[in-house]
Image (cartoon, rainbow, N blue to C red; front, side, top):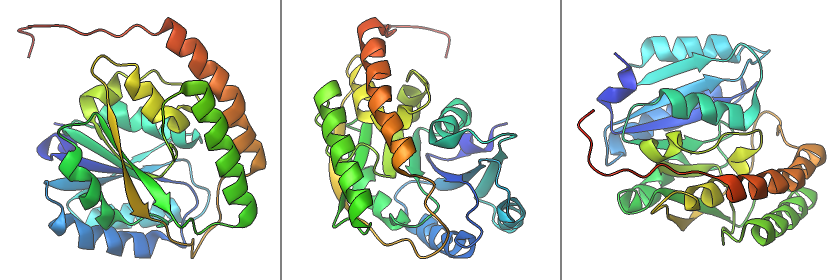
Length: 243
């Protein structure tokens, strides 16, 4: 039996070479779970880390009953982590946040009250705690993406999200899809999303995995999204007796 089926909410954490953050991440998540309005668990997706992250995850999960893990055999990036998680999670809702603790796990409680009424609830990072170059790159990238997708999302890559798992499984997957979750949700019949202001904190350990070059990839991904939007086939259905 898939253990996530015993929970209402699974928090997915993509992890790649975050040994400096794992202790604080464990403590913050363990403190949050009892305060979550849904029965919740944590799912680490170790994206083929090359430092001691894997050993630290193994240790955490051996001590904490609500913590689980998946190991990738090669590095796939954020979109690959999402594909893995969306394919395996069986709780009603799936959450997403980064391992760097620049967003606060406890602020899932700002998003979850809207999870029933919206396909996706996503954060908007206020007072970005990043350097000038990173904030400028994000502003340019977000503006171009909004122009190309017309999704209205102010911060589509904010690493604090809650999505209905059934809808997540139906999302078309491609490298870079993590930048387009609001736009992809809107392709589904009845798909809708809500944006909520959340806190953004400075990184205190480890290194960012994003740079100018992989942000430039987001521009080409916009054209991939436009092709998908033109050719996307949803599969709405009525009554069924297969469940």
